[in-house]
Length: 294
Image 1: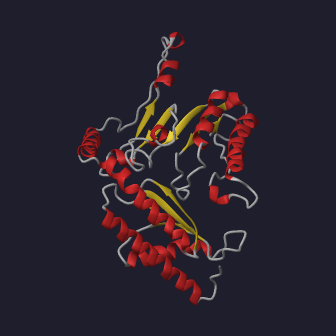
Image 2 (image 1 turned 60 degrees about the horizontal axis):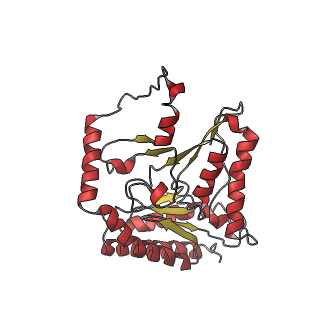
Image 3 (image 1 turned 45 degrees about the vertical axis):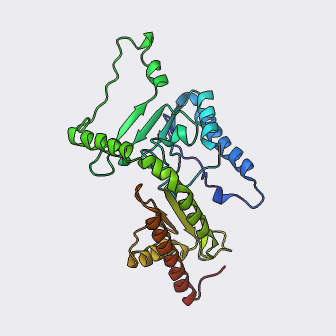
């Protein structure tokens, strides 16, 4: 969320990860608390000073954090109440990662004012990003009070022909080969194998949607805070997985994975088999060190 207040341009809201629920807290209470965080921040800052609320449908870099059901819809209601723009960052979730071109409306039931996207537009072959502006917002700047005004925006590489060609061909191939339909068809298996990881003593949480997932590990399940030892767990698992042919993205005590959209059932099972082996080997390492506790 951005504002023009003197303390700085950006305000950050508290964690929306349901994994952080207090023992005495229900998911509904947690959701209410997160919505109150947004509204209180707007009121504290001053609604007239808040330009926009920016959110990823799934907070991927933070560890594939999936907010509680209904979070985005209620955040949009708060934004409409205070005339704050809603910007959906779909750099990761757009172009098929959750089985749809965009996740905002098809998965989370919202129509944001602006969608930002990149990566999947060209399948990463060349760089390309885009800002998609809603009809509602375009209408706001195109009415009578917008006459004789100019909205000018551009970058050195805007409309680059090579990137545009790669983007168009990527869309063509995804439509031709039914890639989005394939993602939706294979997602149940991904979800089943992902949830099974929660059975490992080292794993505190296994979460994700579509074809993006994360395992969050804790070396000491009884500790209130993240221990220094915990911070190396992600790298330990990644090391063992790489030795067996699987590359993960270790983030402190987490491992994030987002396989190709065209992954087959056999390849998906192989991926999770290696990941399970990596978790077991990391658990063995910690146990031999005499520091793993459950």
